[in-house]
Image 1 (cartoon, one colour):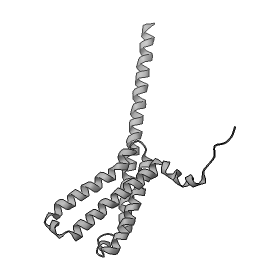
Image 2 (cartoon, one colour):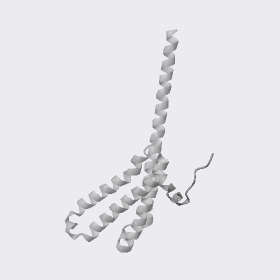
Image 3 (cartoon, one colour):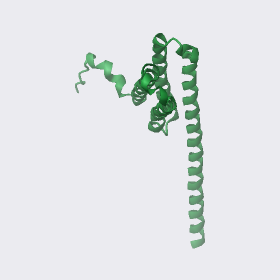
Image 4 (cartoon, one colour):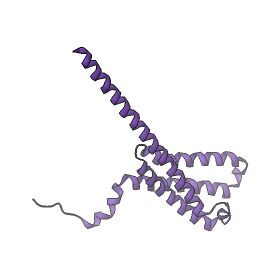
Length: 160
């Protein structure tokens, strides 16, 4: 039987089939876009200065909404949730580092390492909570299945 021909030019796109990597990159790009838009509006649009609290609240809500994408996508897979979140946060950290070049006071607010650690610890915390929840749900499911099996076998013994 003849083997399928492998095109060497298509090997570079094989990473795109990995859902964890794809989701992490997509989320990272969205996070970076929201962050840059927030930064530009906050520092360059003087007409919206009076609405700073509302602007910051909306931008923070948009960031949290985008941050939830890996958590919702990999709800039952904590390791993949963490890896996708870490990839997304790495892209956001790279954007933060690039933004520090244009906005000099940004580095005084929080350094790039601190931003990265904030995201890594946050996604790690969410992944661990998800893992513990899955363990508890699995134990509960196993207990319920075992109690049903015990009740069914007790009912068969009484029928004799």
